[in-house]
Length: 219
Image 1 (cartoon, rainbow, N blue to C red):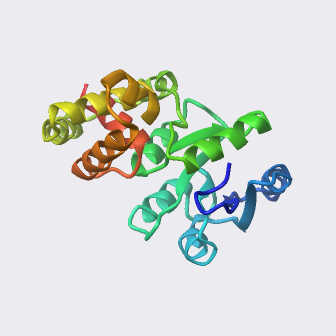
Image 2 (image 1 turned 90 degrees about the vertical axis):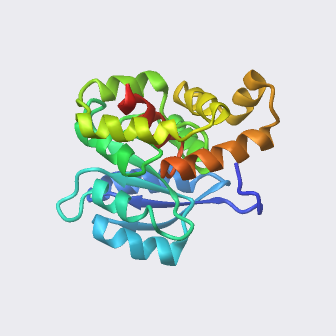
């Protein structure tokens, strides 16, 4: 998969383990539609590297001795042309994964995930498609109790959506792609994208995964 401009997808690797970075660089570097444009071993370096290397996707380790992946991900939310962030983790039931998703990550992959699945996640994140299945997301959320204040805030935000926007938000939480949502709601894909842009602005979220997190938080 290439960008609309026809160039390879640009990937930034952030992990304090040089062996992990080497493995990812070797795996991604051998593909014609992907290129590794930079590496960092500390989240503190990410913002500046994003400015200089302009990645489409950041593969972000969660636990680093300096600035952690959650903090680094949150700092990218207001970055111009912010890339999609996929967090790397060892455990799929880690509370920090959910915190990273709330901070703006598009999804996560386990470090022992098969290479083909990691590549697929990078391509899907770059395309703005779901990286995290709703089943996995629901399982994560079960490990963290949503405070009443956050639940009320989530419900207030969702209350500002139109009926059509709420239907699209619910479909996103079920893991549907824009094309699948368009077919289900008898809309064009362009119309779905327009509704999605508006509802994300109303909810003040950066990506589809955060829409799903917000819906689950309101339950």
